[in-house]
Amino acid sequence: MTKLETIKTALLLIDVQKESEFGIEGVQTAIDNTEALIAKCRELDIPVIYTRQINRKDTIGMSNGEPLDEHGEPVFYNDGTNAADIVDQIKPEKQDIVIDKYRWSSFYDTSLNLILKNMGIKHLIIGGFVTDGCLMTTVFDAYFRDYQVNLVKDICGTTNEGAHMSSIMIMANWIYDITIYDSTELINKLSGRPSKCWQSEYPDQLQFTPENMRQVFNKLNE
Image 1: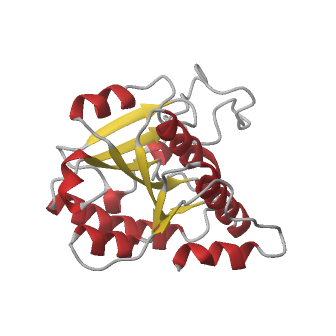
Image 2: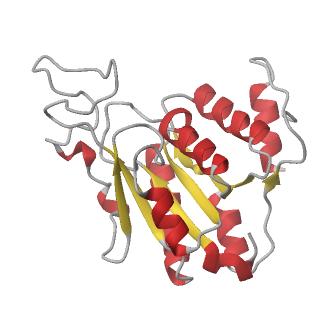
Image 3: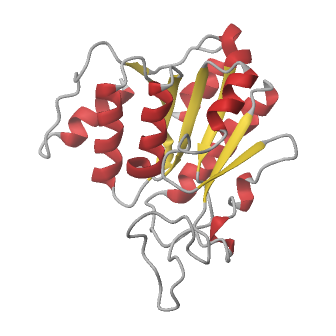
């Protein structure tokens, strides 16, 4: 993604919703970073697309085994509550696109691919929740549809550090044209300033184990 290619780029934010039952680590920092990145994208007329995970209150269309509460309603993303709403700090504006989904991947049985193709999008800037669930499945499905993915790792989050790091390193290992940024570095790039990023050079290059996970993960900042 170069400065000249921003016309073919969209910011895709996965499920940054009011759902709080997961206990996502570092959620406020991720939202603050997202807010700053959204502002830069709006400045450059880069489209902002939000997804919302939806579980119907009546449970129609829910995934197998989705947890239910004592009333037989979905525990997570219940559309009868405000848990399904985008957080107020980064709520969509009138020109933004919001896509509701009923499975983890934002491409599964939604209009996302149709909309992106219609807009001529080639590059996706992606972040959101949770890193090891809806975010990761969306990133792989974007790759399978030939979008070039720019993953912003500090606007992602999940329930624990190990799951967050391992899922990002799995994406780094197996999405061959992925580029990974922190939000400040991507904002620098979009602003035409010097910036740092990590780019895949060959498959499975981040050889990590439970013992060296943090050490290998920190290579993404080099």
